[in-house]
Image 1 (cartoon, rainbow, N blue to C red):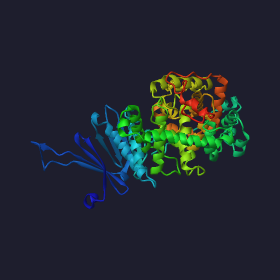
Image 2: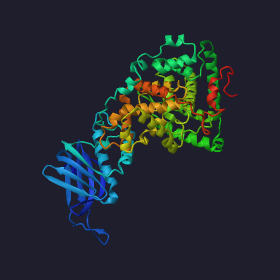
Image 3: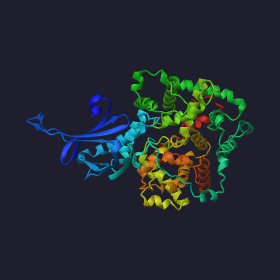
Image 4: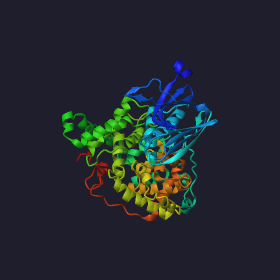
Length: 525
């Protein structure tokens, strides 16, 4: 072949133990320009441990432009790959022990299709795709039929799961009865946010929180109003500057504590050592929103905020995911989102707002017990869905009523489920309700009620499949309507505030009380 002579090709993968007509061999996948080449050759014979030079070399060479269909039979009892080529069919049979090779084959075709786009995916996106699709499909034994036209392969839905390829997903709007039941005007919750004029006219923190619950905050003013609704700064403008100076100095004091720790001292505190190690790893994979460039300074600031939080509240153990929450809040105060604050002030306000938000959110945002999350919170959420939606029985019929697909989004307070501005609208609501975790419970139920009809349209819908689709479904719904339904359901239930648990960070003497102590001007009592 020409490619063997001129060397203008790229070997992509090698699949061993591929048998054709009872002859076992190797299937090599190579690329020559835009054309994929599948070259199978029988293993040579051996005699006394040496190759027989005159042994026959049975081989098949297939070009992707000639292929009409791939059939990948991912089944334990008959794993094989079928190439339908113009006037012939070539079948390569694999032993059961090589079953994962069939997943690798589909992944390879998917990655090659993505890399032919104008903007190919990053290496990290490809690694995410490889690990996630393997985990999701390893135990799903089925046959995949992939049409191929002029070398362009139709990728199965199960392998379009993490944003590497667009999904053919139809999102339908929810039934309007839940909105009409509460006489909700959804535009009120997003279209008329608080302005600076509104904020200046409000003199009570209670009134301010009620307004924010209903209308939200103008995005450009969040850096100014968030510290007030989180009770980091007082609503009284006359006292605000003085308290701000104290907040900055207090943060510097906390930061100085870990900056002056020696390596030997850190080794003496296992909890701090482990937290610092996890933070270092997590920050490397923390992605800022569009428009924000990752710089060394940006990463160092997140590290500083997370390490300071570890020192500030040792009742809490740093858990994965807090890095994303921290980054989202930090963006409100940092450039280019906000240019009105000095860097040290922006960092201090980022810290206090992050610390209070996590502590106020309490049990869910820092829960380390996944089993408890499944057996308590998710059950509560399903009960709410069942009370308000006739479609809840469908979840039970699909064995999805445990809502396990919701664990990760819920524990991150949906920080990765929407764009950053929408997340900020949700989180400022969380910050203004009396019982944040109860609100998140109702918000989750509202979100599921809105999405149920879309879930019902997904072929062979399952919890595993939904895990990969939620980030494409949830953003399609109006955040104002979801928040409004959640608030109204919560109000109608008259659910009492939950007493603190023994392991809760909200128990007596916790740091959550410290944010209200303006008169003492010192958080370290």
